[in-house]
Image (cartoon, rainbow, N blue to C red; front, side, top):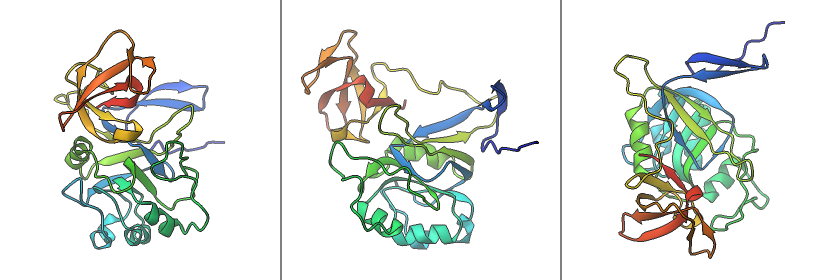
Length: 256
């Protein structure tokens, strides 16, 4: 019996594993979110906002959004989510979403399995969602990080694939947005993750600075004592405010 499985992304099959899985290679731009709801999906990006701090409103969504993956800034309303479902939108990528919007849209009546602001909250990745929602910053009203927004905006009207699986416990998994690029001869391919180095632009993933952008100021070879009181592989990051902080290397993501 022949079974056809949609790959969801254009590329070249490089490896077949156990006659059940394949490895597909493609030049692509990619970003990692903090969390997501819904299944893996693919579509064509449609930029709805011009600023990473601007939310998606109901009026922005129309019939042209059908089968698209919408890109917004700081958030979205429950009414806009309902209209997106009505127009068969496949996915939405935004900076954050408020707890009240989640409760209203999913009609949750019981206590949520997470509380914003606490360090031990659990994500609701198994929620049956009619469309895929990717959050790049988390719960609340934070705008999308500018480098991420600019990358998505520069790839408006392109095919996109979203790996939506989120796991906050081991093994940790964060949602990934993949935008295949042309294989033309003038395409400059970069490593999937830029190397950690002094001067690198990084995105902070720790609880107190989630989503903020900074630059690596120092990168000691030996373990350092951080404010939590432990010694670990650490990096000193200079924030836009001029403040310098020490973080475990696991709490940063190199973006440039």
